Structures are given as C-alpha cells and as structure tokens.
Image (cartoon, rainbow, N blue to C red; front, side):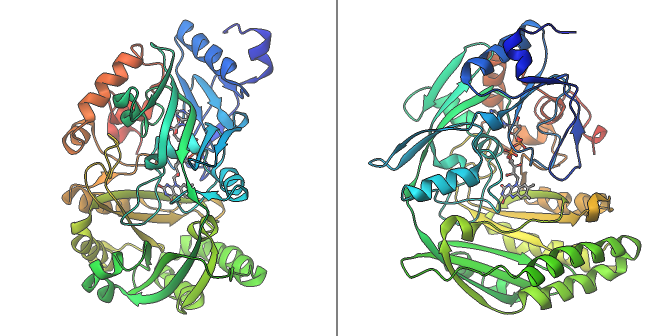
Length: 459
Ligand SMILES: Cc1cc2nc3c(=O)[nH]c(=O)nc-3n(C[C@H](O)[C@H](O)[C@H](O)COP(=O)(O)OP(=O)(O)OC[C@H]3O[C@@H](n4cnc5c(N)ncnc54)[C@H](O)[C@@H]3O)c2cc1C
C-alpha cells in the first residue's frame, strides 16, 4: 500500500468507486484526491511518478465513455475552482481548471461578460470541456477550447508550463484538446465578450426541406442546430441571433416539462424496452407534444445555449466535413427506415455546425464541420440495445472521413486517427516527451492513441 503524507491523506479516499454521469462506465481508483490548491496537485503528480501510478484528472465525470477512468490515482478537480481574475478591459477571465461552466457563466454575467458559444449543458468543468473539444453550434464559431488564450499545464517531465499563442505555441495547440494525455490543466484564461442576449426562433420542418435548403439554413443565423426524429420525416430547427430586445424567457411548466417530458417519457421508454416497435410511435408523439409548434424566446445567451438532458443515455457523435452533411444524413435516415435492419431508435439525431480551427486534435481541425450525434436512452439506468445502431452510424461517418467526439464511445483505431489528423504524430511525439513514462495514460488513450489495446475489447 502506498504511503502518503498527512496533508495528502486528508484530501484522499481509498478505493472509492467512480462512475460517469450516464452510469455507463465505472472504475475504482486506488486513491481519489480532492485538492484545493496547486501545490497539492503538484505533490500528487510527484507521488504518482515516484510510485509509477497512472494519474487522471476528472471534472464533472460527464464523458459518456471510459475517458476519465483509471485504477491508479484520480484527481477530482471540483475543489480547485476559483475565479482568479476578471479583466474587464480586455474582456478575459482566468480560472482554476475545475470550475464548472455554469458557475463561470453566472459570474461572467454579473460582470457583464459571456462566453461566445457553449454546448448543450454547462455542468462540465472548464478543463474537462476543453480537454475533449466540447462544442455547441454556429458555423462561424469555434468550440470552447478555441476561446482559450492562455493555459497552464502541469507535466510529468517539465513541471508547470505556461502556454499561449506567443509562448510554447505547440504545447498550447496540442493541450487545447488533449484528453488529459499531456498533463493536468491548472489554469486557463478565456477570451470572453460583452454579455449578450439571444433571440431564438424554433420551428418544425421536414427533413427533406432542410436538406434541400441546407446552406441557407446553416447560414441563416449566428447559431443554428436541428434535431431529427428518427422513423419520421420530422425535424425541429433552433436558430438564434444576438439581440438587445427585452427578455421573454421560457416559463418552466412543471406538468409539461417534468411530469410529461421526463417522468412519463422515461416510463414509456422503459415499456419500450420490452416492445421496441413502439419507439417510432413514441418519437412521433414526443414531436407532436413538444416540438410541433414554433417558439420564439429572448434570454441570456447561456440560458439559450443550454437544454435539459434529463434521461441518462448512450451517445456517440462524429464530425464530418460540412459539405457531406446532406449525403450523410440521407444515408442514416435510409438505414434507420430500412425494415430489413429491424432497428428502433430514439430521438433525437442532433445536428450541429462548427467553424474550423488549428487545435491539433480538434475534430474541426482545418475544416468546417457538421457534428451528428445519436442517442439511445437508458430509462431508470437500464440498458437498451444500441450496438447495431452505433456500428451502422460509425460506418456511415467513416465513409465521409468522420472524426469522433473524443469524450464519446467510438472505435477509431490509432491508424485511422493518424490518417485523419495531420498533427496526430506530432501530438504523440509531444505526449512522449512531456510524459515519458506514460503516467497520464489510461486504457482509453492506450486503445485509441497508442494502439496498445484491442479496440473491440471495450465495446
Ligand atoms: C448530458 C450531456 C450533455 C453533453 N453535451 C455536450 C455538448 O453539447 N457538446 C459537446 O461537445 N459535448 C457534450 N457532452 C460531453 C461533455 O461536454 C464532455 O464529456 C466533457 O469532457 C465533460 O466535462 P467533464 O468536466 O465532465 O470532464 P470529465 O468527463 O470528468 O473528463 C473528460 C476528460 O477531461 C480530462 N480532464 C478533466 N479535467 C482535466 C484537467 N484539469 N486537466 C487535464 N485533463 C482534464 C479527463 O482526464 C478526461 O480525459 C455532454 C455530455 C453529457 C453527459
């Protein structure tokens, strides 16, 4: 058993089980640490080096894969969560890595600032979101990592490194989507903008009408995304632009939003585990009940970006070159509707768009992309079949040179990743130089980045 000093003893727990938000992956780290300051994090990494233990940081544990898992040391960053500085003149904020995005949103808003784009939820820690290229939607906007202008990384071989566009630029571009493989992110400085409200217009549309007018829809507002309802032709489009008009926030309706859309829906999904052929009807009814009428709302930006994701689910998501969107969605639609495949899949298929950038392992590296995400709900955390759907989905995404979302389960091999990411080899070289003994690597990273574990072993 590893001996640790009193200070680390006070902030650690032995053999405490970790499971991700959707309860689809779990592990039992030998030691779980909950540090509040940088010195303790440095000590933990030193201890890991000396005792040759694997060490992983976790944020909110929201990754729908085993990405955060380890049987070695786990550092839960939740208590390392302070706002270090808000610079109103330059509209930047510097934070400790464990801060949750919802807390950051609120603090920024109080200071008249906001992030320019967000994902569907804000439960994540900022470092967790950055590490996996977490994104929202908006064809002229990047992901959350692209808003970062400075980052402090604790590495195994070179200690604490500051990086930015002007300092250690290679490390900066690599660490902005690095899945914990390069070290522990300690601090980040983010370029914000003045707080803004969004006016969203949400309306139903048929899939064919969207696909035949795709470009005009994608560019019709600053932020555009849509959801398809599998086994039907129905879709629901959400688009939003900045506004200075007065807010007209959505009122929470306990009966509609909680009892029907969560409680009853979860129950019906549970029934459908035994009668899967009910799923198309369920998708149709949910569309009719919740998404068949247009809506228009004005609210704070971060409230508009986020949605409720109440029911735990399996999910996977890939980014394909923007110009392949129509073909890929048509193929997926065709596969789902082909009776011979005998599959029944839940709504939604989520479709989002993102600008390109030069973050080495960002799925939007060097190309504008369409992200397509699929889900299968796990009512009351009970399993449902999803592997056939995933396999067909991945086959279609691969055929369009797709790149998977790093946080989500996928079967891309090291060879395939090397082919699709021009900077992949450089990333691996950098990883080896910053972490020569591989203390930051876990099964996920060994499987996908280092070809050391059979891909099928986990899936
Ligand atoms: C309901 C739900 C909705 C989601 N919506 C979206 C969405 O809209 N868009 C999208 O792109 N993704 C989405 N995701 C995925 C989610 O954004 C990512 O999984 C994100 O990484 C979760 O952040 P976390 O803080 O929970 O990180 P974790 O899951 O705890 O960790 C993720 C990775 O980050 C690493 N990490 C965490 N902290 C540090 C650190 N300080 N230093 C180095 N590495 C670190 C971990 O080691 C791990 O590799 C969603 C997930 C769920 C469950």
